[in-house]
Image 1 (cartoon, rainbow, N blue to C red):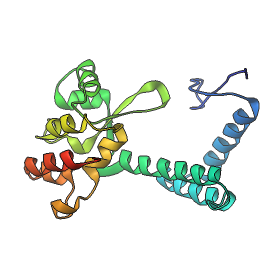
Image 2: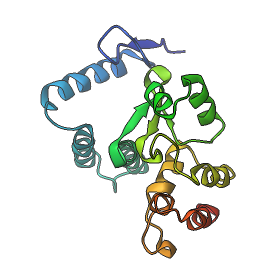
Image 3: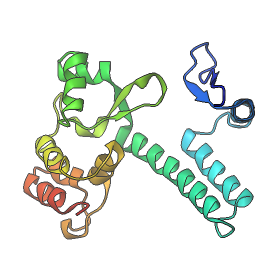
Length: 197
């Protein structure tokens, strides 16, 4: 069994990434140095796009199944970054709880029960809450009902976010989020019933 090496991911003495060998540790160190040096002034989404282009140049998708998988993973990183930053970004658990006038424990419990949209950050096991689901210090009307329908579908946190942020043909090109904002809850719920199944 390989030795596990802990890498100081944040550069502040708080290790949160573990790799299986010294070569991987060295690669992470070099990539982080390149990002710090060449990535100044570039938003994370831009860096991911550049990484995707470099990946495709170095590992053309038509060469092997491994290359196609690697390129798909890079595209997935970009999509997740777009979802995290959509419609004003996100709030920490503390800030979201404060906005709703509840405790941090209460909002985390709502997330665990699938009653609110959020995702778990890999580093430090933090939970982030998209701003777009809040309206005037409350959760959008109908959101919890839509999430209840989606709970029966094989979706992760990002799949649920993608549902709310994707244009749906039978909704006239609107997104379920748009329907909720317009008070058209029935249409959003109908889209949830049809989503992914």
